[in-house]
Each structure stands twice: as structure tokens, then as C-alpha cells.
Length: 210
Image (tube, rainbow, N blue to C red; front, side, top):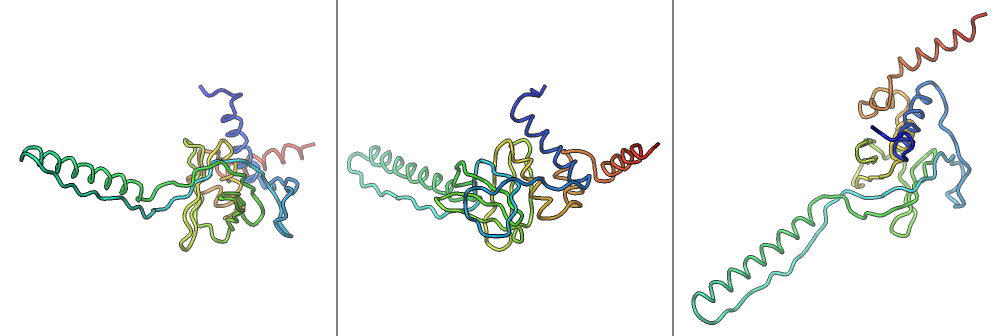
């Protein structure tokens, strides 16, 4: 059973409550601007600290060794075999490092604004603008949110207990309330828009009764 006082459970409850609030017609909460000049016209919705990584392949080289062996035939064969095995191991390691995978793992500030997500990684501020986001995928079991982009911009993964909240808020800002309601990636976070809207309308009618 999930500990109701654990950070994970509290963060999950906050995320599901946010989605319910947005589907009910509520506005995304705002926070004061952080002490960094990001320009004019931005509204700020969250200032988080999350794990950061990017998905891409890499060019990896390895040193291939050559062996010269002198001695008995058995010794020469053994030496050449050991050298071949070493080269094979180095090649396998290089291939494993070269394939697409999550890289640049680090903890970063992640600020949600009205126009983009801002992170500070590799000693610089990075702006992930909404008009380039193609998909937002929450991976609840890993406490992560994965963002894919148009063009050649590599996917971004943000991880931490607040990732579910961030994914719901970002989906609302990028794609709108209908996406947040209908996209199956968010279905685990609560009932559909129709059920939420129906419950809200019923509560309003009850309040209007004499």
C-alpha cells in the first residue's frame, strides 16, 4: 500500500488534483517570477528541480590493437586469440556506448512558463518552446515526463516526483484541455472531461437550489 505521507504519493495527488481542476475549467496556478531575467511577457507556473537527460546516439571510437607473438605454435595461437577477444570486447563496448540512449544525466532547475520550459544544464539556460513540442508522454512508473520535438531536436526527459504534475500542466499549455482529457497517457490521472464537467454542473445546480 502506498504511504499517504510519502513525497511520491503527495506529488501524485497534486498532479491528479491539477488535472481535475483544469478539466473543471480552472486556470493554471501562477507563481512569482524567479530572480532571473527571462524577458518580458512570460507568466510562471512552476519552479522545480528535476533529473535531466537527452536521448541521442553518439560517435564512439575505440583503439584496435595488433599483436605480434613469437614462440611455440601453441603460445602464438593463444596470444592472437587473446588479442582478438580484447578487440571484440572493446568493439562491443563502443557499440553499446554509441547506440541511442539517455545521456547528460544531471539535476537541474526546471521552470514552467506560459511559453516554454526553461532548464539550466551544461552551464547555460535552455528554452524548450511549446511551438516545437510534438508529444508529451508521462511515464508514471519512472516518475518522468518525456518531450519530443520537431526537426532534429533530441527528446528531453525530466524525472522526479513532480514530473506527473509538470506533464499535465505542460500538456494543458501546449495542446489544451481536450488533449489533457482525451490522451490515454493521462487517463490514469482521473476521470474524463465529461465526467468531471458533469459532476461540476451537478454541484452548481445543487448550490442554486433554494
